[in-house]
Amino acid sequence: MVPTAGVAYQPEFEPLINVPVYFWCDLPSLFQSRVDIIGEIVDVALRPSFEWSFGDGSFYATTENGAPYPNGTIQHTYTRPGTYQITLITTWNGSYTHNAATRAVTGTVIKSSNALITVVKAPTTFKG
Image (cartoon, rainbow, N blue to C red; front, top):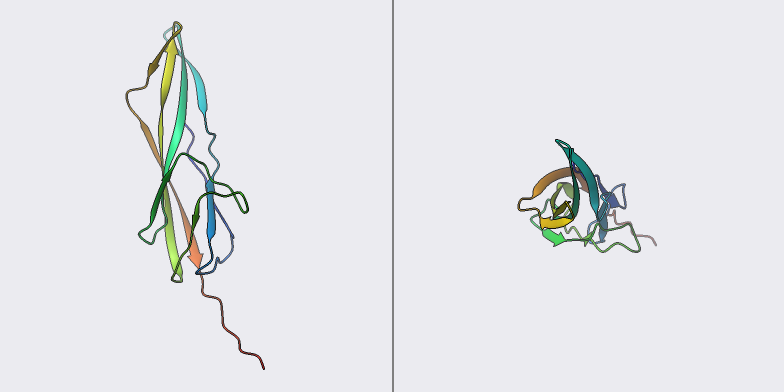
């Protein structure tokens, strides 16, 4: 029922070591749904929180979706070249409304998304 995040990063092609990479996902900051359960209408409102694993042992937790350069708040700098698996764990929490009474959802919905990133070292060329 809740969407699964698509993971994006910039630069998209061969980011360089020691240069920040910007990450974001395409989820809304609020997911709302109206559900009919045996003739009873229930309105559900859920908000995501995120835990990013950058594949090199670094993690970052936030409630922001991130964005591309220059507005991105989720950045990571790799110090070694290689291919890394990015894992984004999205945890949805929220509330539901039934018969004008709003209550907290007592559980959570957890979704996982993955992407691979290949980080390279810039070649050194001496001139002169």
